[in-house]
Length: 110
Length: 115
Image (cartoon, rainbow over all chains, first blue to last red; front, side, top):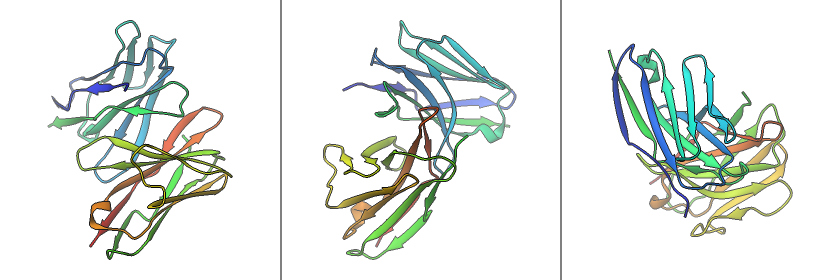
């Protein structure tokens, strides 16, 4: 089946930038998402990008999409301790059938 | 963003009993809702797609008689875990598709512990 892959762990120092990477295999993907999950909580939609876009910026978050390489990244500027969480990359063709990566656990050290 | 409410947040039950979990879209109507299961330190696994006014579509390997889904209104879907067993203990998360944005918004999840 179609896969979404992302590295499992990322550790950064407070104030640095974090970059979480994701690759996917479905060339028909039309929507790509980043969700944040804090311990014991559901998923919070951080941002999403359409496949016809290359970049989207929203305050401290920047999403870059390389459709040719099927590579998606999430950059968090000025990372804070409150950003510590698990970040899920997801993709879908029509938002009906979403496929999630395994999640990247971001640890922010003071 | 749109709000999805999920209740209860945590439930402990005895083996053999049934548990109902509710998922509500609070500020939009959702013809389609989704139920996921998440094991510790793992990603989400789609269990079923809930369609208002019709039968749910279950993913392969998910027992429809075990996990009953009802989507009787445009703002409410329920998941009933019937005759629960300890292996059903898990974190269950619902989502609802907001139709104007075509984006899924997630509930806070329900932690089910079966003793």
